[in-house]
Image (cartoon, rainbow, N blue to C red; front, side, top):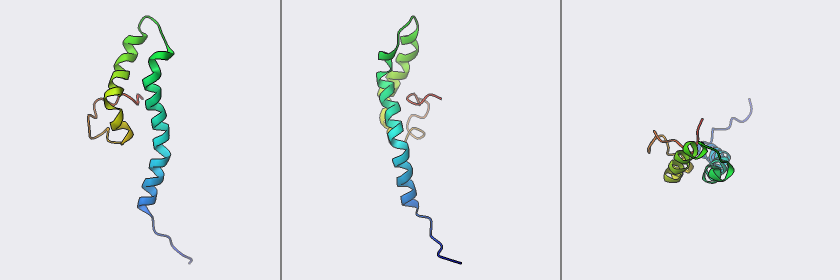
Length: 79
């Protein structure tokens, strides 16, 4: 029947983190520079709370701890 390979959980988790972390870092970095990309009568009213919240909690997003630490303020990744 051939060789059956066992599922390698640590390798799977490492590969998933390596696949998800770089785009997440780009999104967080873009959020920090977001105020430079626009203007308008209510632009800063809408963007400043997102940027300030992301500056406060950026590390929870990059460590994938957002659901456990301050899960109500997931501001760097708006859906």
